[in-house]
Image 1 (cartoon, rainbow, N blue to C red):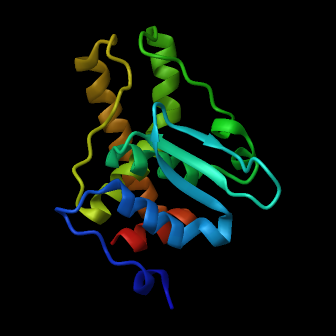
Image 2 (image 1 turned 45 degrees about the vertical axis):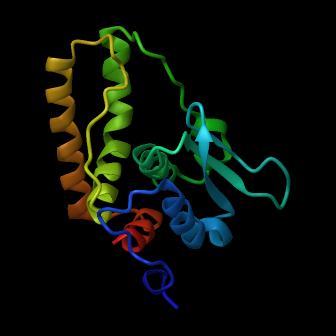
Length: 172
């Protein structure tokens, strides 16, 4: 049985993050010992806490977009990064200065591009996120949106990473 046969495709009016958890489980729980889990105050990734356990990919509350976004990060992260809490990345909270915001955008363009692709697969409206309310949003948002769109176009042209393709197919 293929992943596409095993998972009922999402329909545009059914944006329930628990369904994303079920799709993720069917795609990756056994093969990669990883679970997608909602309800977190802030998203984070925790490598398996004990031998034989599952890695845990937590997304914010029950937000559909957060589940798609965290899945995008996981699909991009290589084997070494998937052994590190939060994939070894840092997080600067709201109020980043222009240099820190530029660094954030360089790191975030790829996962947001993949989130956009996942959103298209299941008919969910995508919105670029600057994740910084204290920035000059008008200027930064436009250039970052172009950066994300370019990255999405390049991803489609060269093909999605294997795990991302599996998830995309299941969402479609």
